[in-house]
Length: 209
Image (cartoon, rainbow, N blue to C red; front, side):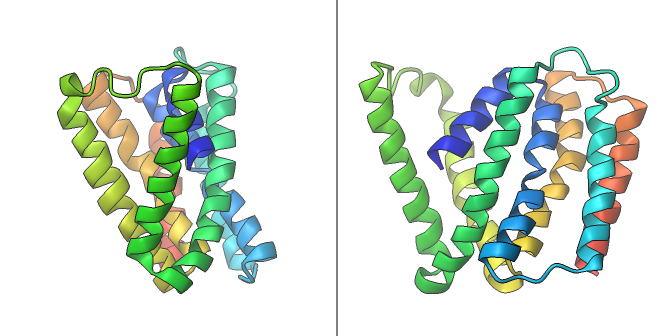
């Protein structure tokens, strides 16, 4: 939680919000690999086809042949590392969910992660509570809805359908994040983004079917 979430935030600060969301969504690729080797989930041609379609969609959205202004190599690298660790977190989460349940898994993992992060913050001499009162709506949204409700349903899907299927929920994020980035941050969506969205939604539909 500490490594993945901190690198995620740093990656967002060093790249466009839409790009950061797309890069973090490659974590299902890592999840499929880890779930196959460490979680006992089988690999088949259908999964490989779905991964291939989604990967092409992500490449279109990232546009590596002409990197969009606002993105940096450091930011994109941090997002990829964050995605890798989240892939490990997903596979490990499935095993613990089967033992302690979805509610306990979500709360314990993030509470321990927050405790460790607070200790690191104190050791580095960084402020812990500075700015909270000025950003209460955002903190409540990220804490209650994203971390609480969001990850509860995420692990519930893993419990019911497996780590690989649960991780594919992140393939919907690239279709949603750019729209929100346009509305809130006034980011521009180019033609390649629409192609990427269509491919990613196609992969998600195939996975559901």
